[in-house]
Image (tube, rainbow, N blue to C red; front, top):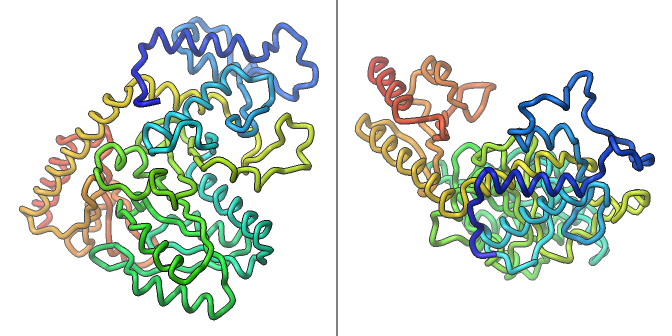
Amino acid sequence: MKYWKKLSAAAQDGIISHALQQNVNYAEGGSLGVPASTLDDKVFYGQASFLKDSPWLRLYVHNPNHIGCHTLGESEPFFKGTQQLEKEVIGLLSEDLLGAVDEGTDGYIAAGGTEANLQAIWIYRNYFQKEYGATPGQIALISSEDTHYSVAKGAGIFGLRQITVPVGPTTRLIEKQAVQTMVRQATEEGVRYFIVVANMATTMFGSIDDPDIYTEVLKAAGLPFKLHVDAAFGGFIYPMVSNDIQLDFKNPDVSSITLDAHKMLQAPYGTGIFLIRKNLMHYVYTAQAAYVNGMDITLSGSRSGANAVAVWMILMTYGYYGWQKKIQVLLSRTDWFCRELEKRKIRYYRQADMNIVTIDARDLDPMLAAKYYLVPDRHLGQPAWYKVVVMKHVDQTKLLDFLKDVDNSR
């Protein structure tokens, strides 16, 4: 695929209706062994007239379960129609957005970016254990101090050591010397294998990691590693506008990537995306799930097919170039906002080609931060930063209101 095309609402409706016809129809019987049904019609009335005009709500009522990973081959046949749409999303994002070769990845729609990051950690822990005979104590997670807290969760859940690399206070970037020092110290303490998590836009700052810093250090030391990219925030922005990206599948060191559709894509909450190169997912096959066709291979198990199709619908509504245009509008608005802050001599951090602006707390009245729901870098103690995220609803009028209040507070 190169690049995905826009589809009309009518065309999408037809494709979704056809997919539902291929799924199990509970009303017609014949599905005696499936522990599921449509949503309870005493609570969620499935015959409402408005459903004919809303393919996603119609699908939601049908309640397909997308357990498993549909890019691997066999899956539960009861929901094969909507599973095919999820499979199409995985290929589209891997190839058109993130530079993978055709049919070169596996993946699934997860419950969020946290689950997708945990899925990567789980796979690579098992990979090092099976291929190298590693013990958990010999495997370390390494990432920057601005990395999402899901990595700390992963270290705790999977019993791995966590190595946190400091970043420059104004650049928010890691430095090679710090990585060298921390890797050397870890190896002296028995670590032999590394799971690297590099960021394509950190949650607080939108900062972009240089993955080569990690990989050059580890290669020079002869240490096996797997590189996962957390693009939960930046994945639907940065690849669309940046000409110098080292964090997608065109980089041979990148093995997997997390995306979050419920952030910039505005999908329903509980819609993350996990993408990984072929021949790695099998390290987490769960043999005990023998009654599931294809066996379960995801952390979440049962998953909403409706959320998977929601991602497909959003992508098809815009098409590649329509989505690129939307991102460019948001970035232009962010550029303007930054210029306004500079006029007022307000200090901030902003990664080029990202729509997060993180304001130095010393230059902002905390009452204004609270009024506009700006997110602090910490809720316990005195914040050092507050962030503004220029989403679709954050238009220039709202930003002007904020700036006027800033002027009045000084």
